[in-house]
Image 1 (cartoon, rainbow, N blue to C red):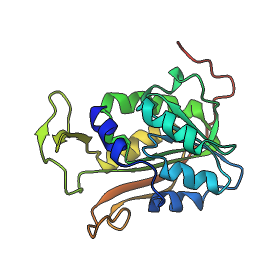
Image 2 (image 1 turned 180 degrees about the horizontal axis):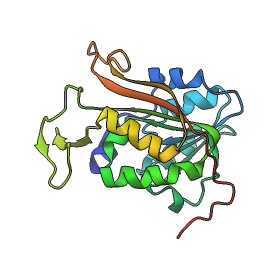
Image 3 (image 1 turned 90 degrees about the vertical axis):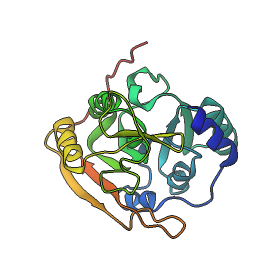
Image 4 (image 1 turned 135 degrees about the vertical axis):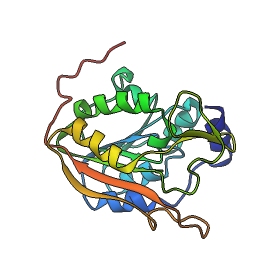
Length: 222
């Protein structure tokens, strides 16, 4: 939490959306609804909203969310403070959504938190809804750098920043178990997804479409 509070103070609103958001938009129609898990400084949420996708963006840093809502909140865009691994406890959400979007956030939570999130996802996606994930995996150059986190497999603290590196095949298996008879639209661990400052590292990118649906009668826990 302290890391991200400091980061957001020096990285407010960015004009450029990620390559992943442009990729995902191809699979969404105008008027679709999207839930972003961990929106950061709001650059991808803003991009989706500008393309007339009703976007709800979650982040745990409350002061950043307040700032973003005041600066960018609109008919198509709302920001909510909360822990995206505890979706059923965020009362302002209005499921089900056409898309759940997670860029560079799955590797920021523990395996136990991931399991909780995945158990909630079917309740928050419409039937034929899209789950979009981009995250760090074993091939990423930061894998195994820094100090390992006790009791957590493949999790490390490097440059004061927690990262848990995801196993590609295991993630696919978890998604299939979570979403049931889902369609994997795209799945790869490769370069070219998120080049930055001349560095083109490996990342995991997955798009899956669920055959299940939920959320209409969801009751939130306190």
